[in-house]
Image 1 (cartoon, helix red, strand yellow):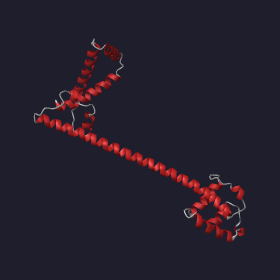
Image 2 (image 1 turned 30 degrees about the vertical axis):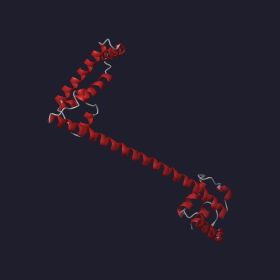
Image 3 (image 1 turned 90 degrees about the horizontal axis):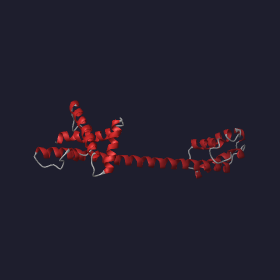
Length: 226
């Protein structure tokens, strides 16, 4: 029935003019050679041929319907379909690799966060038990600790204390830059620091605030370790 439909619609052959022997042999031909193609796909193949979406000239077959023409159309359709399937499978594999990669990244990040939390808790315990710590000053605290510990509700400070620590961070950073600007042991660093202070006076404080944020992160954690 599908072949009869295609012969009539796409080849312009009237139903009464269709040769039953040709249709029967065509059906057997499809069963023998194109078992992977469904009935709906046979219709789709003819439609794609009519729209020039596969490499077959339907005009050359106009008014004819035979096994040779059927084989040409279905073969070209299979090439197109198989190429599309390969592209989909390649994209799927690419997506799976991406998901696997992100899962590995997320797992590693989780492990890293847990290690920070455990180390911080161990440090608190060392200090409680009077055991010497390797974190002697706020400078020893790593910058990324604060975000991890805050995000996981391990540490939390009230607003007045946070404001106080932020002000301290600004003073620490500014004094540090002023000290470097006044040194004679490294003239390049001194010049760079003076230029930094000049920009700060002009309101160009982006780099300064970045340094303050880094210092603030250290001091925030240090508030619990000192």
